[in-house]
Length: 335
Image (cartoon, rainbow, N blue to C red):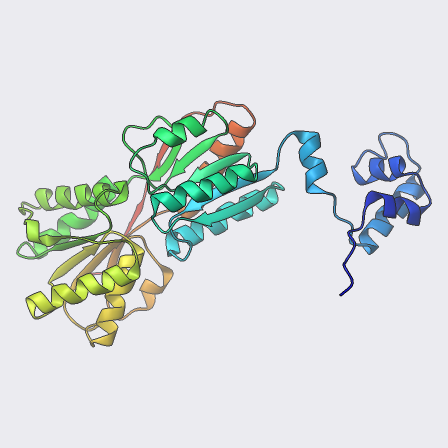
């Protein structure tokens, strides 16, 4: 098989009948400034377009001392929230001429170390990370080499730049009226207890019960992982234990609710009287027969603030505030 050849500035110069220096000036947008004749500029640009010429990112990186790439590290790209966030962030990067590199960790700290090392080896200009780590020590050290922005999760009392949705107060507000209706039985289904989203959403759940005058029972709290299969298995075990679906259930993420809904669909429970509530919203929830009250994150704003922070930090600026907690919207579908 014949090896394809990349079109270079030298090729464009030969086809246009000009020097390589002249072709380079025109293709780098400096032809008019340095008084290259308009006809020559137009000929060079036409040939470049016809030959599908693309400037070398490596040459641009050497010239600017940047790779013009940002690394994004997420636990799971198939998770609806992370998928929407990644899409929004990629559009912002694309519009700015920046390449976004995405890696997944599967909530595994060891794999997270590996993908971060790979990002650094590819000389990304900055990192945006939804970390599975319990400590931010490694990222504090890394931030001495390149900008790091945490999102979705926080670790300890980190001082690193951070963008997350405030989940405690919205969860408490969502839970309080439901708890008044189902004071005798209200279950919480969360992910790994070590992760800050689980802790924060459980705190909000607990506060909501307290506001409603309901005492939290330890057996109401169920922890697993954020994967849909964990939601399915946990809900199946709970239904088997009770001999019926629970009266009320709050899932701490969209993935967990996906597993719950799959079990309910398979066992003809979508018309049951269960009161479902969840952190994270999905446009398909408006089309389901079962009603679901939710907390809706603004993924577009999350992506915007992450991009703004990392871009300013790459440019050597000190944006304020460095830690941003964004509001969430409550979507009630129950009457």
